[in-house]
Image (tube, rainbow, N blue to C red; front, side, top):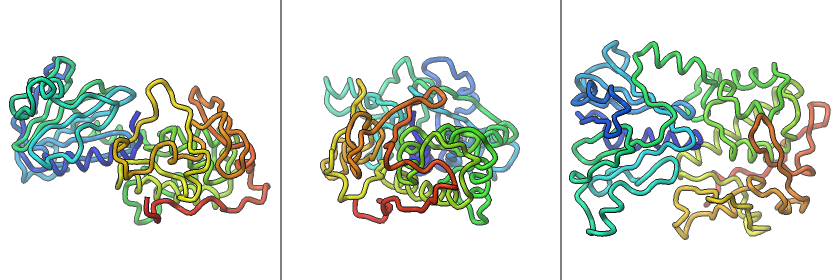
Amino acid sequence: MPEGHTVHRLAAVFARGFGGQRVRTSSPQGRFSDAARLDGQVLLGAEAVGKHLFLPFAPSAEVDPADPSVRHVHVHLGLYGSWTFAGDPGFAGAHAIGAPRLRVGEREEESEGTVDWRRIVPRETVRLRIAGPRGLADLTGPTACEVLDAEGRQRVLDRLGPDPLRPDPDGSARRRFVEGIRRSRTTIGALLMDQKVVAGIGNIYRAELLFRARLDPFVPGRDLTAGMCEEMWEDLVALMAYGARTGRIVTTQPEHRQIEARIVERSRGTRQNGDEDPDVVPREESFYVYHRQTLPCRLCGTTVRSGEIAARTVFWCPRCQRVRSRRAGWTREHPAAPWALAV
């Protein structure tokens, strides 16, 4: 499932590729009947909140996004959803975002060479196609794809916790995060995956954030101090901002990357954007504990462990992550942030 930084990158792609343009919409799969009434409207832009994408449609580009006539296509990719793009050179800056998928028209390109994107026939699995003057986007396999009015959009937002990638000029998002953790008896490992506590965190950010904070994933949220939670929030904001900028999650310091540069791959592997680029940090060097169970910790050599919290696998180093409560004399000694480094 794409983590929050990926959805913010997706929103940026839509804003650049379609923002303010009149578009054609269709549902080749036939399961999104609302595509017909959106056809020919203007896509005003795009908004990401946690793992949710909102695409606002209006009769004209002059319509205020807050106008009651605006309808929002709400998309949650879930485990299997993906957007794939095709268009003029430089149109999207990405060929796919979401679960691994073939490029739009990839089969045709293999047999016939480069194909004009305007002639690409959508696959039968495409839930929604959006086509503009310079390119198109195909949505397949989403958990949610629906049209909402302003009230419906707000109901979705009301279910979500603060998003570290959205502006927080008055610090209210950070306060909500801190309060949501400290009032709960639930383990911090479970709270960080609860989208009502913080929107956009997935399993990678959860594991790496807790390692960097030296926190045991099984400590109850109410046992943490406000300072611990504030430091986690600040670290998370910067880590996810780096991810939104680069499309990659990298939490390791350069001097630690060659130490035990291995991960325990799943059958399909832990994929990141740009894995084929030799200039990016390889995924084997990107994480401290995520998918490194049974391997030595990069910092102390202790075997990294894995377990289950709320039906999801959690990864941690039992020696580095010994802090269990505010009574443990906690200090922030995690590695310097990779977003400030040349990665």
